[in-house]
Image (tube, rainbow, N blue to C red):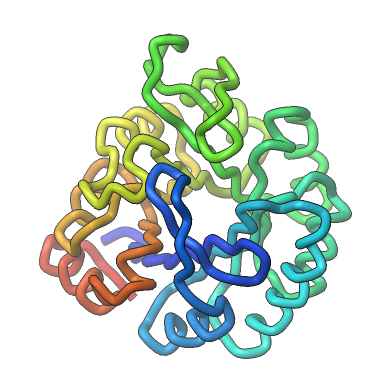
Length: 253
């Protein structure tokens, strides 16, 4: 039996509140991030991910304050992303209480920053967030995007995952823009495609709508599964997800 599958609630934060939409649009309020984090800690989440979805300079102070407040009250690994651009940003997040930092746009703009962060802190602290969508513009049919899927990069998602692994990134958070918020299930084809070209731990994100959606993502190659709205609005519990995964023959914590 391999390493236990991790269940990770994701808190998309905008100006100090958790929000959730469909395909990154029509965001609605889902609650206070610190209170939700406390609840997930008690409910058996294995990790938490915070993503500052606007990541404007005006909101950064809010994010650091929120990370500190959360870290004081939860006892599971905390990953924070959104606006992470430099080694110094990662340093500040870790000092504030984060266990890992997630990087996206800054790495696309200057891939060397992956090497710089890994050289300073080690692979284990860095998660590459890949927002990918189906596209005829790339050889694999999956294209990396930014700005919540609204801006195409022309970068092949499989090539980018392979390069990030070579540069030393510790994990890849693979988010399907097409599936995000639809609750129709994870993008199994995309997970399989990325798993085929990388060995680093893979976190599947985008599309979870029911407990039975999670085992196929693991079968496709995900080491961890991430979801947001179904947990925030009480549609599915972490316990129900773990039970479904356990019944499918995989180990959970």
